[in-house]
Length: 180
Image (cartoon, rainbow, N blue to C red; front, side, top):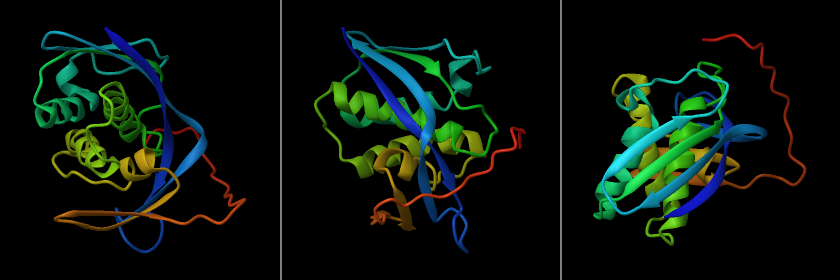
């Protein structure tokens, strides 16, 4: 068994005049996941966070992201994902993106980086597809994986660009603690 603990930042998306084309990370809030792999062919998701998450793993955004990763990797494995800290679902700061991004990032680290960051974005988009009712999008998973400010120039093929961020860049984000 091998195990890693990772952090995926919260994100703000839909920056600018387009829909689902830009997003950026927030540095103080995010998900913390532990991911453990071993021999076998099973996926378990354990919720130790204070947030309510689906008990059925088929309804959890981590599942399609991890399955896409494993299918592309081509080797079955036992995977246990423990959600230690979770952004509140429906908070508008990329809660689903952080979970799916953290899971695929952790797997990539544990397996010595078989995939590029851009490919990890594609895998994490599968979680967004589940939560959005069938439309994969990368405005949150892109910055969650790549960091900083991300521009999405296209989806066929995926064209994700990390934009330069000026030193000491900061912004204010008001979060009214309501579920959307």
